[in-house]
Amino acid sequence: MATPGIVRKLAATALLTMITAVAGASVASSAHAHEFAYGQDVSNYEPAHDWAASGAEFGIVKATEGTDFTDRAFARHWAEMAGQNMVRGAYHYGRPANDPVAEADFFLSVVNKQPAKPGDLLALDLETTDGKPAAYVNAWAKTWLERVKAKTGVTPLFYSGWNFASKYGQGLGQYPLWVAHYSKAKGTVTPPPPWKTWTIHQYTDSPVDQNVSSVSLDQLRALGRK
Image (cartoon, rainbow, N blue to C red):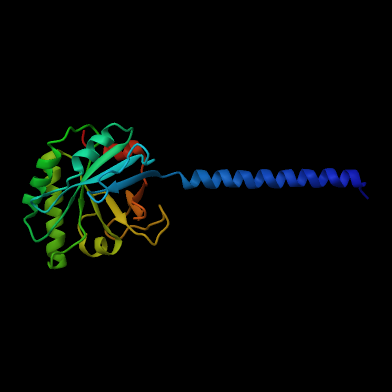
């Protein structure tokens, strides 16, 4: 039978081992939680967004909508992000009631007025049908995306909610998916068909749209301007 002193030493050793194991698991869990690059996206609804204090490693901002709306905060956001060590991008809110080529050209005319740098991302935000059928919306999005790629050499990201992308994103699987799904924990979303993988997951809109990227920052930059 062990003496009381030995028992105490054994108990202390066991406790230390347990604490070390818990601490190790905590560190591993923390590392896993931070394996995705973190980003935010904003529009004129957050005109004074503080990118320096945001903690974002990448940021995507609204530039245009339709054929005549320019986001009043776009130029400021674009300049602010340029001063940070982050990947930045610009998105266009699509309106399928209009001509997709006209919308793509309008988007590029606004974005191209701002200084560009390698790695700048371009994206189509499609969340409405404007009363058009699915096949029409699919074709509209494809035309917009093809137009931007032809004019810039950049393969644009396609953004939408999970359900909308599943129905109206058919035939667009070659474009990197930026998908909104708030009921899934960050980074746990499964891409809707026809996508096999997701590139960015927007997991909440509180207090601002927040995202994680499944690819590294260098890989994210590689999707942008050369």
